[in-house]
Length: 523
Image (tube, rainbow, N blue to C red; front, top):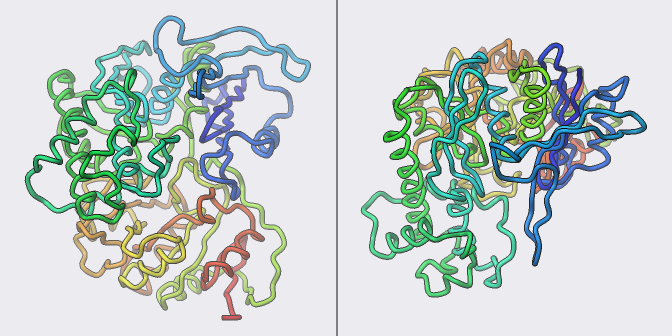
């Protein structure tokens, strides 16, 4: 039995799973291949997904979703909320002339089952789930019989409450309102690193109390309601914003931690789901909390994992199974199409040559195989550089169109991680911050001394591991700067022709596509 699953709305994704092998076949995010970030499912995504099926799938799955318009709510499938009765829709549909089973479940369930299916824990092992995102802020427990129990709500919409501060401070965000920008949570998270330590002052406490207590069902967050706030339009580079961002972040986490301390005392593993799972500071605090035997955050913790989650929910419904064999490199395959060679020097790929170029200060675009699922570049759609100089970080940020002091993440040989970072275990999906202990790594050390580390084993990504090993043989350090390979505000680059255009446009020194290393020679 094969299941074809769709996630509508933003972060549109099509995923396929094989129930016989209990494996993820693919998860194609619509934004990948240089489409705009957060794009809904496109015809391209659907056609690419169809290449996996010789025959039509036995099950068609639709991940529930809803969105609010000016005077109505549009609902897709089973909708957004619910884990109990009414949270599933089961039936038959005609799909290209064939009658297939149809399954839909809520957005809430999709997040829960994605985190469970991708986690390393065996089916039947009870787990807690924390689902925190733009609407939900709840804890759950999945028991040994795959029943979901709601353990309690901490607050609604922690992600929206957190991100609203950035919109409030930004003079470019209209006072009349508008939809919250998907990029604002990440920008505010970055601002937290620049926050100065100190007690919460009266203005800060008043804002935190207001933003965390407001009933969003009756009082949606609107900038026009905060025109008298001392933080209204203070600017996104304001030190007051950075200080408040840190304190608001701490206040939100503190409420969730307090709930866990008081109500989750069995020490089960914790699975983290929802867009707040991309907050590396919060993830690190959960890992270091001592409240859970282990903490797992899937690479698709945001909405791009919901097609997988609903497919798994359907598999659970029809077969009783809810675990997957999977790879983080289950996205679209790279297309090594024609490259215009003017201004390029092309040579057969040799890892030692690329490693030497990186050591010599070159910045290189790097592509291999299928792209990553989720938003993090993990060595298949990456821009790479040596990790030693602050000037390298500044240049990478100019290439990316970001502030020059924005953080740049490191990728590290897993066996060497403890030599460079204060970390106890692997971090294969680049989702937690750790303190840098190696003073040589200036390019990847953020202002607060942290880095969002990816650890790499050879069985996870052999080619990237071997490149890191070659770089270590030259430099003595198995660490590289790694940031995502994409046009600004677009998904990963997925063709050689786009990569060549991008390299010339932003000033890369070279790039790897297919089995060829291209060096820019026209200045």
